[in-house]
Each structure stands twice: as structure tokens, then as C-alpha cells.
Image 1 (cartoon, rainbow, N blue to C red):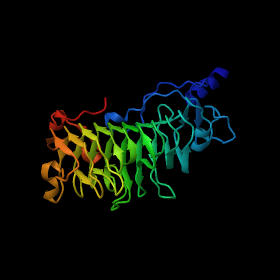
Image 2: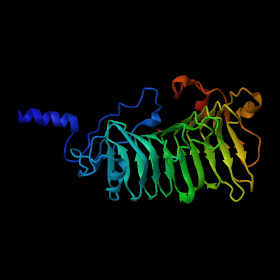
Image 3: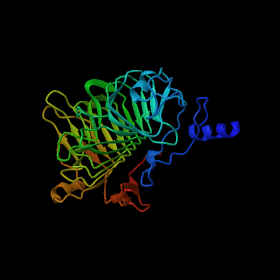
Image 4: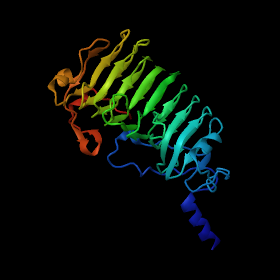
Length: 345
């Protein structure tokens, strides 16, 4: 009888020594592109929807909220969320060098604003629904060397999703291998998939960015030296904008080896310079496809001829996605975009 009980506990909870089994993630739908592979983590503390704030945060006795979990982590530790929904108006990570992740083999859902105020934080394998009572962007990155990897990020009817900087200047933000979609209120000109404001040397790599309210990526104001590489940016009113404001400009940003396609409102790539014009911005070796109802916005593959960036070596062609309607943005083997597209591997 004791052996039977122990076996049941093991299957339900996993080993109780703090280690985590290498279980393949089966919660990612078949339509996910390869960039959604969830990295393996070793969990230190745990939270679960049925947990308690009075618990010690072990696998057997988890915390209940995400905020309690991240508050109890020390640098170098990982907090894991068991499968389920966590509704919290705002979660703020103030501890440097910690990681927040789904428990291996699952994908937890956080509904609410996620704000990172400490450096060297990593967030991975979560479904982040950024809708929050204050209508603020989520996730918001207010610190250096923050990494978001392999998350599903949205804010349908809310605000922008990723905000890099904004209220403070940040460096080395890394957004890699995420699906970023349905961010903001349809018809808004202010709600973007990724909003890069006051950020140096960001890395936006291998993401799938689609169906957002305004821009897929807004580069600026004040984005310096970013690398935007190997992303699929599809079905946004505007794919990407190099931009500044009255006091700041954006320079030396490189957009290379992406697929940028099917913008619904204006250009796939454009600029906005109400003040000083940016310099050194490059659009190089991307696959570009315009399918706008207004043929003007399909010229040059949907790339405006506005100043502030140079364009070279791009391929203008229909991407030939496996199933765009189902949001499967893999490319068929014969796609002409494979000449230049370099996905995350």
C-alpha cells in the first residue's frame, strides 16, 4: 500500500527533491513555429493555483501567487509555475538574476501586467496575457540584461505588449523565440507588439509577431544599435517603424534576415522623424511581401522611400507559409524567402 501511494504521488507531483524531469512540452500547439521550444529549467520554488501564501514554496506545498513566488527567490534561483491560470493585476520582479518559468512539461498562464525592475532576469515558457486594470503595456522591461524566451505574449483589447525602456533607459534587452500577437485595441495607433523606447543594443531574434493593433515593432524613439533578426512579422497594420520624437532619434539599428509581410494598413517598413533623423539604420537581406488593398503600399515589397534607413539585398516575394490562416508561419521548402530568412535554430 505504501508503495502504491508513493507511486501515485510521484506521477502527480514528480520527484520531491527539487529536481525537475525532462518532460517534452506538449502544451504547444502543432501550429507553433520551431522558435516556441521551451527551455528546460531546474525549479527552486513553486507556485500553483491551489497553493497558499503560507506555504514554503516547495513542490508539495507551493505558493498561490506569482508575486509571492518571485519575491521569495534569491539570485540564481528559478521559480516555476504549475499548470493553470494566475490572475494578478500586476506582478513586479525586483530581485536581480532570478528566473520565472513554467513547470517543465506545462505552460502556465499569467493574466495581468508583468513588470521587470531588476537586471539579469529571465522569463521563459509562459503564456502572458497582459490585459490589466490600468491598461499599461506588458511585459515592461525597466532593467538591463533581461531575457524573455519562448513565451506566448498577447494583450487582446489591452495595450502594447513588450515595452523596452520607456520610463528609464535600459541595455541589452533580449526578446527571443516568442510568439507576440493580438496586442492592443484594434484601430489604435499606439499599441504595438514590441515598443522599443530608450534602449541600447536590444536583440529581437527569432520571434513570430503578428496581428497586433498597430506596429509589429516600433524601433524608437531612442533605440540605438538594435539587432532585429530572423523574425516573422506578418499581418500588422504596419510591420516595423524606425522612429524618433522631438528630442530623440534612433540610429544604427539593423533589421536583417526577417520575413516582413502582409501589412494591412500602411507599409511593411517605414519611418517617423518629427525631430532629428536617424542615421545608420539598415534593412538588409529580408524577405518582403506587400498585400495591401492599396497597391501604393506594396511598392518595393511594402517598403517606404522615406529617409532614415538604407535598404539592400532584400528579396520581394510571397512567403508561402505552411498555413497562415492557422498561424503556422513555417515556410514551405520551396519558399523564395529561404534565400534570406534565417530563423532561430
